[in-house]
Figure: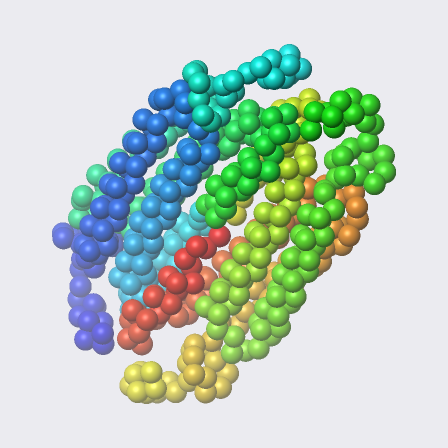
Length: 113
Length: 113
Length: 113
Length: 113
């Protein structure tokens, strides 16, 4: 890590970004896994919409299904959060933007459901 | 309400159900409004999946978008819950299934996010 | 339940209330169980305050303890909610205040953590 | 840890710890502010316990009060989390324990209410 840090002084692009990016980018692995999970959640949500087209849909079944999708979204958010903590927050002291990056994250986590 | 109740003694079908249904059915209004909200949430979720296909997606932006969808799902769940409370829970003493319907709802609300 | 209902027409006081009360009262059992749970949570919270008086308290330990107390509060809230649903919401159609009691509950549940 | 730490220039103790501590310690400011907030929450919780000693306590009032305490606990947890992110997570790459510290935090945040 010390070596990385010394290289950091000359590093012009944000970590994990393919090109000169104005901001930090998600680690590829977290990005792909989050996308995969959210795709599945989208399919699940689609099935709830279909379920609600039928007149005999039952409230509690719908509540349970919505909760399941919320759980899937929380799981995807956890993947993103973990990637962010490892790639961007844990390296903040090195970059010298600790206060900003923590403030930004706290704001995003507030009222986290 | 009194009229409905008197009819209830002879009523073979569950309230709000179009046909002989083995269970209670969602009020039409709640069903349509929940479906509408969930359709919008699905579109939003679709846009996050697309966002994650780009290599320069930023973690905190994704977290914020996921949180927005979770808020939309909570809103839809509130519509369903309100309809259920009004149509099915508030009438439970009349039907005589208070314990069962409350137990079912508590189970569905547990760990509610 | 039907018998109770017929008596209800002459009933001047709110259910579960010891005296002429302007509002509905908690069922005794739920009230005592909720109080017991909240007493325990208060003791737990007291121990976290003490933990924070020591200079070597560790952030993640504190987070875990706070989460445990939040879980205990949620458990107590579930006891109260269940009592309310059984005693007051399930009988709302009989009393004729369904809309008001559901609105009040939805407001209290909103942003439920 | 000790070896890594000794390599970390001349710093022998864990950050923010008054003595040779086996673990990282909370920043003083976060510790005092969290303690203050939790003390207030404890007083609020105490008042709910008292409220539940009266037979005319009303369910929805109790639910609202519990929710208020939960909000206060979330606020205290945010203070602790922010201090942890700034003092310990943002410096993890320097210490070389990124994976461990992120795993520990994710575990503590899971099911965060």
